[in-house]
Length: 279
Image (cartoon, rainbow, N blue to C red):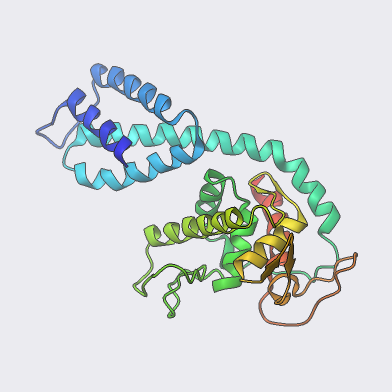
């Protein structure tokens, strides 16, 4: 946030304060905008997590300067500039990783009872995808865990643990907002990373926005659902969390019938849906 306040101060010093609400950008504003974009590019260095952080912070600041049309204009232009950069990088990443994801599906998208994807999990796909991309985390895993923990509902569970059911943070049961929703997604990814950091020498981990392996999905589900970790192995005391409704062609033969799908089949079918609709 400190960087953005410095940027905002720079904007104010460059453009001054306007006295009217009607505003048309001037040629000087165009030059100022070029300078500000260049400064912003130097600060974020094309780091997508920083880009998203700046976009989020600009959105928070915009209401504070809504009575200043010149500043509002410049902030909106900077947000658009960042969004274009961020989206461009995400599209390039999707294109380069599509073949790898297809190979993953060719290996594992078998023996799965058909999952109806007409559910709430894709209502805010772009938000989930943007946060996952910014944090180098597979979107399908974010969606699969969200589905498993709260059935992808847009609400705050009554137990106060928020949609991803993180027990180590004190939440509340107010009405959900977009800001709270995005915070919960970020919390989920941060919590997942902290688990892997804690057990990095004992558990296999290969989780990125561009790829994942089955062993890492098992590790993530185990750590997230408090399974027992012993040596370099994860003991699946609660295999239903991972395998339900999935009868793969290899040695895994755990399957039964419940209303809600579980992490592994949901991940695979979500990835298939992503590839067909967003890649």
